[in-house]
Length: 267
Length: 267
Image (tube, rainbow over all chains, first blue to last red; front, side, top):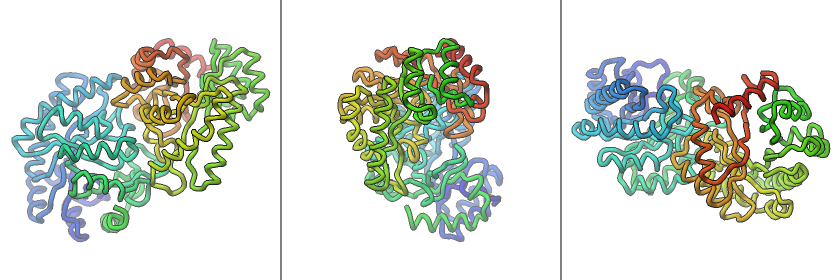
């Protein structure tokens, strides 16, 4: 369970209790959720409940329109690595950032991303925290992530070397004409670090906060899982649903229960 | 001037007059706009004013959840070819369609698209109407077009043979990590049939109807033009802006004048 799915008013502890109540034993928290109780307390809750942490969301946001801005981002990512290590997270998920300031130079933004990851990679390796580049849907290329396909993320990961892979979220990549080949390549490279699920709604009414519950949209989640498994990844599928006007307005227990039911039915 | 930009309340004749008043001598109408005055009258207005028609928008929408539905789409596309021929259009722009009915099988939708284009291609060739597949932004993959990159459109065009190419709209493809290579390939194949421009706004508040005027967004339009020209395309740049809450609410003359000014400044 990616805890962004449970922004229903629950505290961090209530989210964990809610997951456990419904048999969910792996979570992926966001840094603001960890900070809301403090890193030590969050780690105590996680370890005390013997939970697997499938990822920490999120590092990234590397491009900036000044050297000071880029350094501030690197510093923040180093702190994120330490937090991921304290939580025993399987990876730190990187939402890499978009165009800085008033720039229209996406090639340069992409270079800044690669440079930023290179700058934090030694610390990540030393802390045994894999860095998972999450290619985001192209509709976020300007303001959230200028890495927009699995292949592009893999090119970057290969250039950077060991310790960098991809987080594959169905929402972001389901449309890719090269999807099956790209997933197969990610598997061959042993660089699938996370697999996020939700669904693409028709119509989608908000670019960021209108993701669907599995089964309510058009993504062939079973077919996607088959591609991921054919590539050798049998790890958790992590439910990540940003849904300001629907699921975030429901009781947390209903959300967790529905995730479990839909996972069994559609995924 | 793509006449979708001028959905400001003007009639077809007023749009043409408005374009001419500001020195715009090439237009691309939509079929509903042509139908609003009738094909014969539209052709009379176009030819009487010695206008170039850079494209007719739009054919496509091939996938359907029944054979009858697919045939109805083919029949409609055959009529669109005849209309494009009557208008002397440089091409018929194809927005190919998304997932039919409740289907989650995007590979099958893509096959239906290719089959649909194959079915209309003989008529298009006989009428000397090039068919321009317009790859649409991946955010439209489900409901408008399951062809989402230039390379994917070119693969389809090559499989179909002569008379099929691509309409390259900056809005849909600016984010593509493979953009420059894809445009170069399109040029080598002599299959760039149209070049549409507008801008990507940050934030974008509506998936369909919040396109920006050139210069108001993040797309490097000069850089894009350089790639297109390096690929050997020196044809018109066609301004296509869907803007329900901004430009469509302004007087048509202001919109045309702004397009001309911004074209000179940014494109």
